Amino acid sequence: ELGAAYEALANPAAVTLDFTTGVDVLVGTANDDTVNAVLGAGGALSVVDTLDAGLGNDTLNITDITGATAMINTINITGIDVVNVRSVGDVSNAGAAFDLSDLAAGTVNITQATNVVLSANAASDVNITSTAVTGNITIDGGDAVTVNTDDATISVAIGGTTGPAGAIDVTHS
Image (cartoon, rainbow, N blue to C red; front, side, top):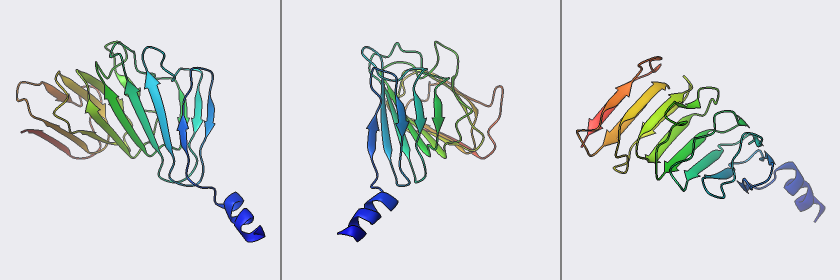
């Protein structure tokens, strides 16, 4: 009984955290946590929120439910290893880059958007691998950059300002 209590304190279970409409200061565990953020009408992620995901292989899921929301650039986020982004509109900051250059996430995945304008950290692999991206794609920075679309008419621009540190793979299937 005491051993189980010690184990729970020393090695807390992974948690799922959700940003709220208030001011959030979220703290993860040493395990593989998941953090969910919603942007748009009634959205919950704002510039005053703070996230320290802690150790582990932590994932931040960002979902823009209205498609007209400027993606947040200035939020204080640390400890995130994977960022997954879905939007019913653009993944950008009002036409400028959705700036993740200060976030050293291992992987950034964009799976749904109209247009993508992204600035990524040189340590982050960038994957745009969905048939649900229907507009133009612009990526600066990143490490390995992979773009896979099913529309050969989609314009893909990589490294216009800052080239990726690793390989580039673009496929129109």
